[in-house]
Length: 310
Length: 76
Image (cartoon, rainbow over all chains, first blue to last red):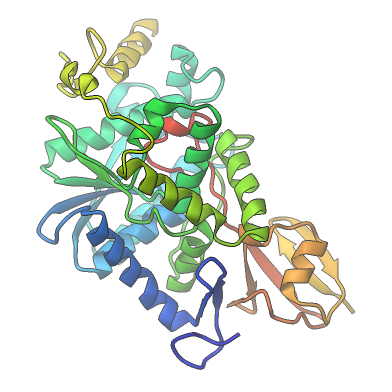
């Protein structure tokens, strides 16, 4: 198979685009497309400060790499979750993230949840019972809280995460199966900011997970290959595998599923947006971040509960 | 001689002469879920496997929250 842009041998074939590219042209194509999506979805401008949530995984490190190559002011935020489970997961992911930042002369904020709040994510999950045996819900809550806190405290205009199309399609699939309209209405490449809440964007949302893996390999980005030990058996992995089976027989199915959803949402054919939730937000008395719960926000309540159980 | 596909710690042996795509399907590996690397270079799925080939398959799926709507930053 030949590269579409030159006659050299192709390194990757993207069936959903009917496009094959060699390594050189693929490494050009990915940032070109990213720049196109940033513009199309009005994610951010070149003069805005971007905080990239980096986990040491292929998507977040690749995102950071791409944004820097495109000339954006992008710093990183790594959250130390305290996940070990016998494979030193958090330690290794932090090592790789710090290595990437150092090699590329990039600024990296590191927040260790246990040092900051007294307990690691798995311990907080045990104490709060929020995760019902798995810390994923606690992990998500902590990430949301800390990403916003650092963005606010250090004056960043926008938060960027490495969600790829497979992530988006799996979430969309799960929320559609359950008809979780509150979550469906919020899903998209951009979550606008508001008082106290940073704008959140997903510049990689139209790239397949396979494409981002290829990018990381071709760029020589060293990322953590091991899965989060708590990801085993997760619904989202099951949904991704299911969608990949569909994609194998129907190339482009995942992309069409996601893009047509965005189009239907934009056209107003799916939902009528309500503004009621926004008017019910107030600053948490402890951390100052917006919350809809009556007293402290969910994150501060969880930390208080954990501290009182010690 | 055979050609080998290596995915994490599992080795799949296939007859040389078939395409990578056919080899993946015969081994019940979803092509969309892996990237194939031979001798340090990525290969496309029309590549014909040779005797003695050792194809490293890189799994692309990264883990996520079981509460998918709550995962604000992906685990990958």
